[in-house]
Image 1 (cartoon, rainbow, N blue to C red):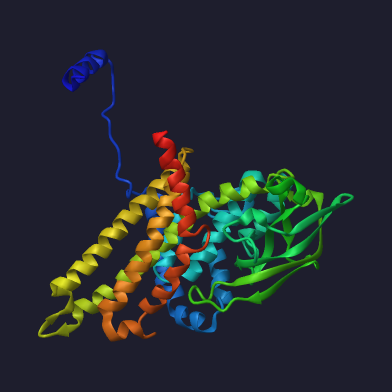
Image 2: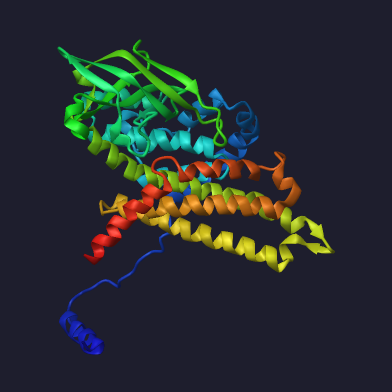
Length: 406
């Protein structure tokens, strides 16, 4: 096909029409509102979160006052409508917030991430009016939520869960235990996945909204973790936990569908967290290696070191493009599952690499708790594990790639 001829014919076809010049914006271009949010979160992170990070990491506990301030700042209900107590913003605003918080502390970042994605999204999408009016005003002002899917015997194979939900008149009785549940230590609201009939397989899985004051639910062992230590990760135990049929989220037997869809969006949030982590590690490293002198010149002027931070900066930029692209696709209502998996896979890998290389560039001080980079290094590993391991992301991506060629 002659390209010149095609373009010429196209030009003739449009001759005489009133058209606007075609234009597009770079993926990293933010709206005025998004820039203001980014700047505000940066300021809050530096001034309020940063002084508390080391102590929270040491104790393995999130500062209660800091959680309260996250609510006051509007970070816990970013996409929830104004009428229900939220900020009424778009998904990109949530992603920017998660990224910027992670530049200072990935633990605080995942607190906000889970509240906005794994908790907020399903309640917005499938919660009925009564459920939304009951829970969103609380989730936006003072109540932390958690997403209870994983169990000791069902991690990546999430739909092999054993928690049961037996109907009892107009109620369901839940029994079982959930493992590695983020935010559960502070939660007053739980989205619990249980199977109403194991003979139905995954089609028996149903999502229930459980109040933290319910006597049948309790938080068990808190995990003593390598990284994101102040983010609570606990066992959640359901012991004859009675919930009304009015507390079923969406439809009975559709829990597996809801979980998949929520995790697909949630992976963009984790990708944003890992992106922020990588940027935070580089932010903490560059001023020191520029100032630090060895052999009569700045460490940052040695070619070998330059190659390292140039590679890190390039990977961060590539990661940002992946994350923002997946986010904009989601906002536009376009397919984004493959792009979300790619973003999470790539960002989790480059975050681990960035944090490791930054420790090396800092030398001895990088290996001490005097600098925040060793914490970023420990925090980075979780990105390759939660909300879908790297192998699960590869499996997802491979499915789409194969389909493109069939």
